[in-house]
Length: 298
Image (tube, rainbow, N blue to C red; front, side, top):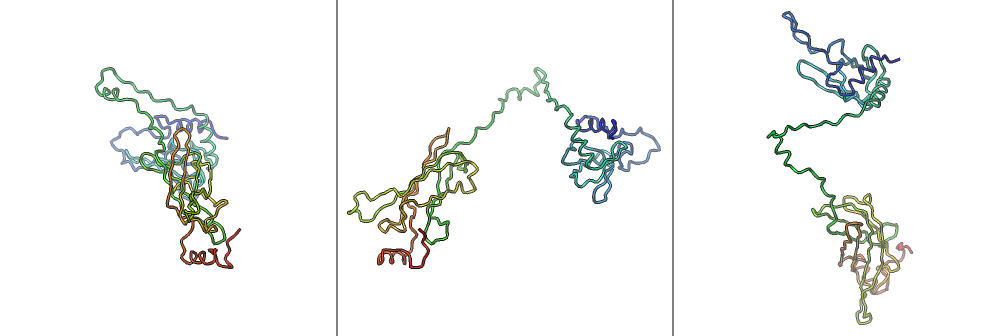
């Protein structure tokens, strides 16, 4: 059973009282007193044995909690604090009672749970005191406003993410920027549309066609160092299997952020078909871009 003295002393310590119950009173001056050898007073010492076998004699520090044991080593007018995890402690001798590390840790948790919350410090200002006149004229500090999206950057390129040889779609990095140009993770809804151009303007009075449209929901957790990465898979029209499409297209992106607005960006020089002189000539002569035996998927 833990003695009442042990609990009272520990409670007074953890409450952060100005008077440390484990700090010895300075001895009265004496003409034959020997110089201070730096040791902690025996009556007030806490003895801690570590798992390593090291034995420490010091004073408990009010910062001791359920995670760490804090000790203060005093010498003359100097003190040195040291913290150690409880799993490095084997036993603690406190107020004449020997405790295991787990018993002492549980006692710390119990005493801290029963301590009242610290009272807020009050500041007393004397009327007319010039030392505080400047502070009274300072406006109250206000929290900085949360950054807002100012514009939208995008980084798009052809992408492949399966086992066949043809491109699978567009890899898009979405990058909302604040006023300083910093990447700003946000929640919002993104709509992307890809446009292509047919060759043979005479045959096609309306050569520009929509090749796909995608809608995605973005959350702050989707953002990395380069922004939010999205895979926009080719839909009904695949540029590598439609010979009349030119190799470049335009990607238009619109991001709607609740409470901040809608932001748009476009890449009008996006390759929708990889460059290959061999495949271009093969397509010219055979109408196909891939050799027999190549896995092109469905």
